[in-house]
Length: 531
Image (cartoon, rainbow, N blue to C red; front, side, top):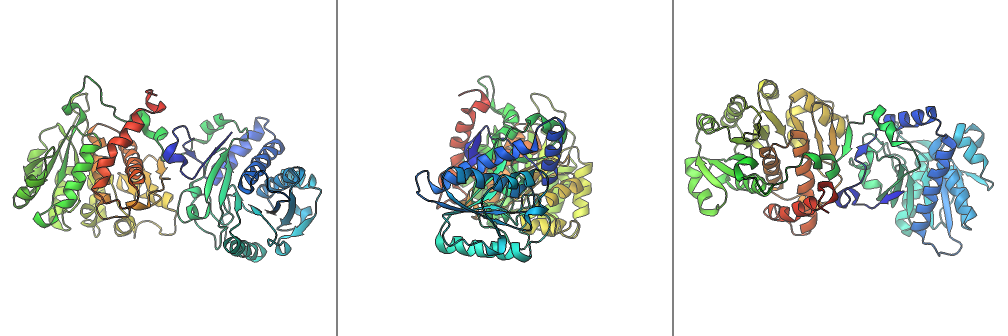
């Protein structure tokens, strides 16, 4: 079975959500051998999937098509040898370039190479001029060093050829040069038209900048036993509905607005009110039963003149906010959008974190807090104070930094050279909060080690105010008692899907208005038992 397309996670519900680190994939391969799954058989199936993908890229009826296959010294190269043999059997003209000596190949790769009866050219000498397609089977996802020597020179020639001739490049497992764990480019990387991998996708398929090198993505089932995942316990996941749908709040006929929670968005002064309204609108459209903007008196008229379903309440000080939150039904707080940077915002944050503990029951969902934008910037010089308060707080907390805010808050505490996945996980443990590290490859991490990686294609989100809407959406889902990790992951996915649906010209105000369509399709999908 092969699942394909560049937008798999955005449009498919049944896609496997587990992402395997290269070390975890290697463990799966070892376990497969222990239960009697032949490595040679698995390699043959992988080669078949590669050959099929190659034919699709070239076209079924291209006469005398020429395919150049670049093989590395490991199992990735073995997959390439199988694909070369099968393509030659179909009548295609196939040339093979090998990195290293054929006699140096070992195990299943040596067996696959032994079945190839055509010539083998040194990688440095293989020509692309007459090729209709090049298959990159040099290195797999486990590459953990910079590429140099003949491989580097060959990849540079390949990229130049593909750019000049516009011919396709098919990468096996992951484009050679991309680290499958981090998405890092190890010196140089193949710029692929398409990529085919096996069993499960890898974080490097979705983390930047490797994500930009892979082209369209296919996943082939080569017969590995999925029950092996129970032994591996993967903690990195693709951010797709299958990850969080079981915890998604679905309105019931017997429900009422108070059961859907009450979100509070704390507003800044009169000149900075737009961000709070964007967050509030996001919370309301995400399903919160009630939303109130806690506003300074001087901004009350501004808010009241443009709001309808969203309520307002005067809140000039942390004491006012504490008083408001004695109503236990107000169970989600969004703090930061347009609030201002400084001591006043820090005081508001401490007041919210120190609030009374709320017991969870059907009528009073647990209270959760989202810190975004100015709430994060206000603690840039004293992050330990914030982290200690979060860990002592009876409430659950979500922090939503972009890269710049993350660097200011965690930069001196977390190794900048670590992958985005690793940095986000470390930040979650360090802070005691769920972390949403935003970007085209947004990572959500829970202190318990779980993490989701966004896979959406939504460049339109790079617009002022979209982060405020996202913070509000997370708050709206938290108000409905959705757990923090699932709420943050779901909001990230819905946020991108809304932008994808709207397309070019998107501004932040458009995002909440697209959410009804996003939610309708979700609730009508098989995941919710309605289709």
